[in-house]
Length: 166
Image 1: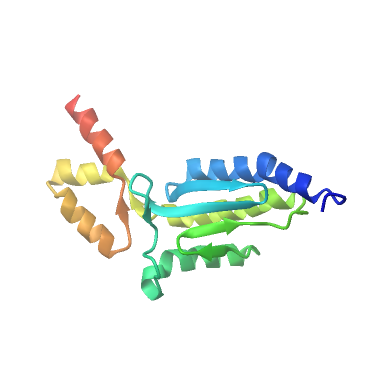
Image 2 (image 1 turned 135 degrees about the horizontal axis):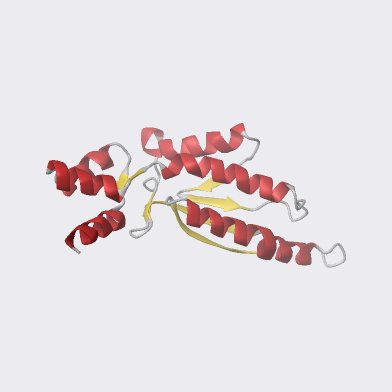
């Protein structure tokens, strides 16, 4: 391993490509609750809402309850990326000899697939509008959303409420 430079390649892969690339995905997609890793082994934790860290699917989900991750896997597979999904976590572990051009391609595929999951949250501004304009209770909105596999952006709702009060 040392003679072939595998350890150095893993370190460079994590520090220069995977770490920064996955951090950017976390900034972009509300369904990414956490990114952690080192070298060539990283984990992307998928959540319904960043603040609560509620998993995007329940533990042991199957069938319709697992639909968001099934769609995510299909989106990845359709573009030639085989995802390693365990529970609500996607493990990113490319071959340590992956080229500098292939690693960003894999990150771009993850980006596209995550875009489909990020639509699983109702924006806080919309939740606020339903409450403020139409008198629709937030807890009822949350119940209906949960039945449909969605979550509410409560931080965005709180921000909109605070802005109105200011």
